Length: 357
Image (cartoon, rainbow, N blue to C red; front, side):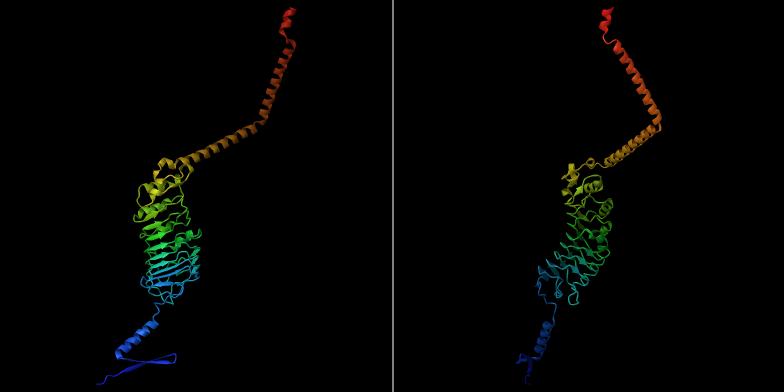
């Protein structure tokens, strides 16, 4: 039986190519060609560098005003840094309407991000690390991190403005970030800590270094001590070593939950400036005496004021008698002076009297 030949014709630029193929090989070639032509997950944005072997895409210092929309679907690590992306809108990471299901690490440091809208990270079900460091966050929606149930590490170093500090209580609810194990809040000039921020039992590392903490409230220390797995980092805070530090000082002496406890130093008062906190003695904190001394001075001032008022009242009520008494004293003094003056005139020189005799 004669072998049959199948001829495929491809027409392009007015040129015809005729290629003899066997039936099976023909269909395989057509399928492969259609697959390569229709596959979009290997497309790479012109403003990014794609490394398919490492499953990494980087978009660095391209002055982008928004996130690129043609990120390949295979990406596992996406780094967008050094741009001018001021707002993360809802579904900002949807690539042509498709979610990045394989994305595990998202690095967005240094992009001048100021606003994170609700559901901004929607479509990233497997995201485990999110870095938003070195931005200027002015507003974070309560639902900004919605859907990040597998997020383990969240970095907000040097990103929070003063107005966002309290708002973060609602934003970082651990009911939504149930898998969060590390939270980095270094360099945000935080002077106080929201109590609700540390309600998660899964949190294992909390970085609070290089802030403006002078002390830590007893309620927060109690939560930390009850959650023995957590490690808190407090170095480079201007701790005030006075009565307000007593609870933190006693906790630091009896816990291993603060790895950098040995490096914590006093910022004030002046006599203790630069002293290691763990080198202090209880009496150095002047706990109890300072309050007592303040109360004593206040009480003394009140007593002296009452005495002064009473004295002035007595003088006012007896002003006529006092005036008469003063006049009597003046008259008595005048009479006495006149007697001395008279005797002086008559007995001015006793020696003359003895000669005359």
